[in-house]
Image 1 (cartoon, one colour):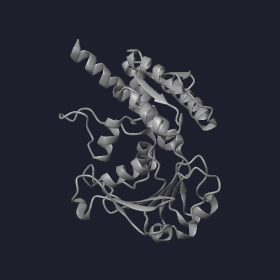
Image 2 (cartoon, one colour):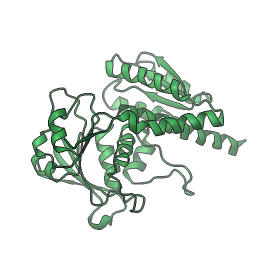
Image 3 (cartoon, one colour):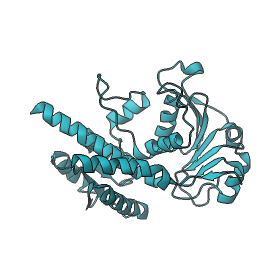
Length: 311
């Protein structure tokens, strides 16, 4: 088999080392507070994983457990605490629009997950900086950002092309259109120049920037296409179906494709996919956590700059 299996640990290593060096050389101690208000085993595991990784990197991490009924006021307390530099919430909490509300309760200056409306708006409108001078980059949601970094690592992005257009000519299928990962990921990749087929149970949408990337931001077109139409065309197949039963039909994947799984379950048949894919990334969790810490350090710097300007 010629398939190269690339592990998240290998991809995240350089980012983690960079973070360690920044924190140590500058003698800083950014503080991240995570709120856990549910009994979801995946959330508990993610919290434990975050704590372990932060300890290794030099980030101060504090997990605050509370009931969902007091979560909002606890977030507000953390917003007002100058010693807290980043805030995250382990979702789902209520599992509905109330979770979206909570995402906007988190102060935009401390939102390490990039879920605040300001960041979401900027991401969908291909606005990459918070200031006109373009000195402060927007915060991007951790898993979509991690998937972008995975694609950069394995060479899907074309470094010869101008920044912002480096996926021009690439066709990507994303099997997941959740508001947390799938849809923002499709938007990010389309804004970088790819034609993206976004797949969910209701059908397939196409995200793109038009012929010759003439549009400044992506647009979305409805299609009547099916999975068997788009998989054979795709240079990259990314899956995040939260079901142990779901498997991508390997026989439909084009020879030499890049296949990436971000579900907690294995959406690809490991043996079969290695017969078709050139590169297979079975999970991305460690890259996601590295991006979380990266966002935290960025927000720490923005807060420090703001405090200095107002002194």
